[in-house]
Length: 156
Image 1 (cartoon, rainbow, N blue to C red):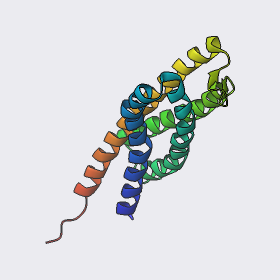
Image 2 (image 1 turned 30 degrees about the horizontal axis):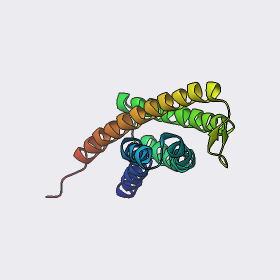
Image 3 (image 1 turned 90 degrees about the horizontal axis):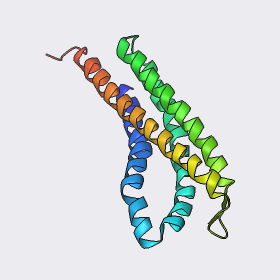
């Protein structure tokens, strides 16, 4: 069961945060070049719904994995990272709704730039914190899995 749990955790983290990383590092820049900065933002508006849904699927899997370990300092750190991921996801969903209300998708227009751009900066900051929490959680999970494997009896 541990192998299944680990595979699900890896797949969930790779899809969620790997998707975020690739999108932020590559797709946004290409979209700016091909479409325009404004039009790319309307693509991102739709994509972030899927990223947030991926987070909602991943969080229970990450919690299952953290709960499977005995109490330790590292497990507490994993729960702290998980809490950071959960709070960041809740904030991102809330901010997304707020930002959506400031857009007119039919006209590809920002209705209130003075309100939109500061809120968008917050969205980017919270996304960065979430990404850092995911990296830390992944590293801590790998260290826990290594320790768990070392404690297994060796077949002779």
